[in-house]
Image (cartoon, rainbow, N blue to C red; front, side, top):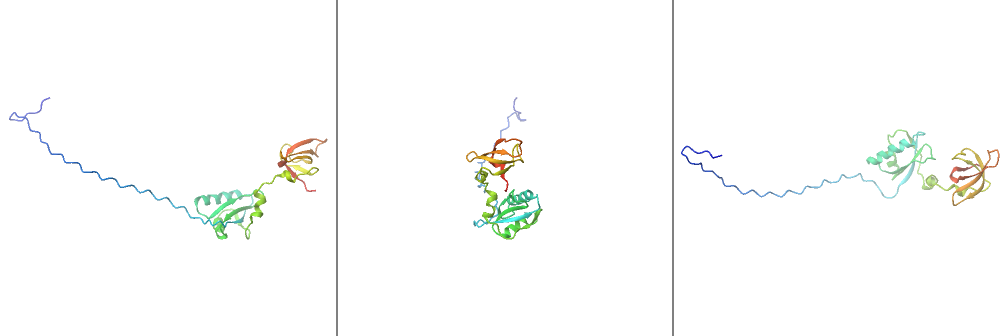
Length: 192
């Protein structure tokens, strides 16, 4: 294709404008890192105390879960919550002081109050550390079987194996002497 000619038969001159040098691009400013959100400061001077919180019977797990949720949200200043299966109607709370414990249980449903004073570690130690029942068993003791196929039956111990934590017993409820080897954790001493 040919370029258009002007009326006098000459081709038009191309008009060129001088190209300006590009301006230097300024270096971008470094982006400031967002500051981390500060977590609530908890007092941790190592002087925690144990308190027993009284709950509605059977609602211990609910109270414990509500306290755990408040701990995770950072709303309360307590270190731990312990639910002891043998201590019905109570939840043990570890806190720096009484006021921190009262702030923690304030407004929680099923909380009925708090025992006066503090608990000592020795008072709850027996609930926390499971002692082997084999050490309590002896030959000729009368026991009740609390687990397994013979649950609810009474028996007399004939032999105790400390290493395997087992005991051989003779069932008292059977019509003939039937020796059975049972895990020691399934045995409970019957008071004489």
